[in-house]
Length: 125
Image (tube, rainbow, N blue to C red; front, side):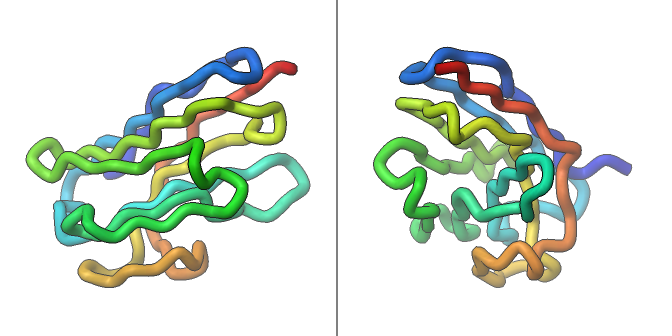
């Protein structure tokens, strides 16, 4: 049973914007912190952004601060990542993920137990 599904990836020029969405189902309700991570071939998956269950606590990787915004709509069980001023180095597969337990805030990818299938983001210079 698929429980996290990302959408919104694509290919854009540097400086453009994209919005990624993650739809959650099953047990991944509003009690779960949600995170976005990204990975390029040959490198480890890296943290991008996280948002706690209420939406009042967020964290960003230094590389995306001021350009990316994470948000959630608990009524719809969705999480979004608005990406502005995209750079070629943002090119990666982006994953939505939920931690192993609810009401637990973490940005450590090792503490995330459920992952979406990923969506490709490619930024051309």
